[in-house]
Structures are given as structure tokens and as C-alpha cells.
Image 1 (cartoon, rainbow, N blue to C red):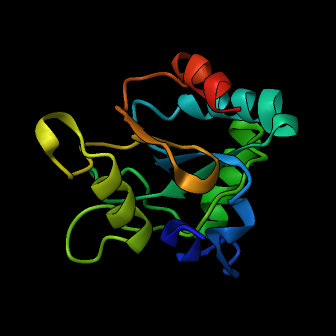
Image 2 (tube, rainbow, N blue to C red):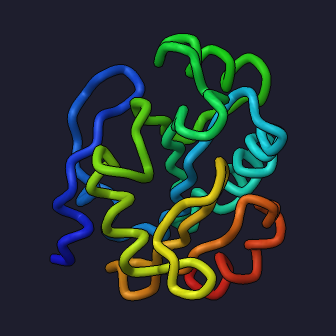
Image 3 (cartoon, rainbow, N blue to C red):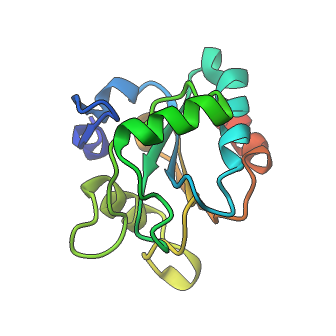
Amino acid sequence: MDTLYTISVKTIDGKECDLSKYAEKVMLIVNTASKCGFTGQYKGLEELYKKYKDRDLIVLGFPCNQFNSQEPGTEAEISSFCELNYGVTFPLFSKIDVNGDNAHPLYKELKQRAPGILGTQIIKWNFTKFLVGRGAETVKRFASAASPEALEKEIETLL
């Protein structure tokens, strides 16, 4: 099994799990924030999830407060915000860092596998997206400005 699936993550309600439960799925992994100019993308992410979940797409949201403190809330507040404002049903996880010394191992791995422009590994902003194919054979990065809808053809290819 690919090492990506051995990484442990914590759900928004504090339960430990590892990514192996998603090994047979196509994953769209996104660092999210509730007070960002891109926050409206939650709607598109949820639409993608609903449209493709029966074909094994899973959207995974990782709140992050590293960019202008745009995710200041607690896990409970984040979960409530996402559900009430965007009807989010895809899995959300505990707040993490995506850059720096305390970057979560998941993001260290994703950034190494799919560096940004000019090979940079830094995440530039909220709602950077990583599309991971089944078995982690494919990992692609998309910038914050890429709308969830713009990823549909790439998702279709991996499904």
C-alpha cells in the first residue's frame, strides 16, 4: 500500500483515522477556511461530492488558519458553519498547518508529490486542491482560483 494511505488524520470531531479507508477512492483534498474570498467554493466542492460520490470520489476538507487567520473558529464552529451555510456533507478534519515546521504530514507528502509553479512546495493560499487518483498513482495540484467545477474533467478521467 502506498505510504500516503498510512498517514493518520483527525476528523473534525476528534477521531483518529488513516487515509487507508480512502485507498480505493479518488480523493480531492482541500485546505479550507470559513472567512476567505474563496469560501464560496464549499458549494462547488459539495456539488462535486454529491455528483460523484457514488462513483468513488471523496472530498476531504482540512481547515487551515495560516492565511490571514481566515479560519479562526473551533472545530465545532467550523463544522456548523459548513453545514449551515453550504450544506457540506463531505468529511471535514481538524484544523492543520499546511506550511512550515508544523505542516501536517499529509501536506508534506502532497506538496512533495505535486509541487507548485517552478517546483515550489509552499501552499500559497486557502482552497489549494490536490486530486489523488486511486492507489495514489496520480497526484495533481490546483491553485485556489481553480473552481471545483473546473476540475470535473480531471475527476472524470480518474473515475
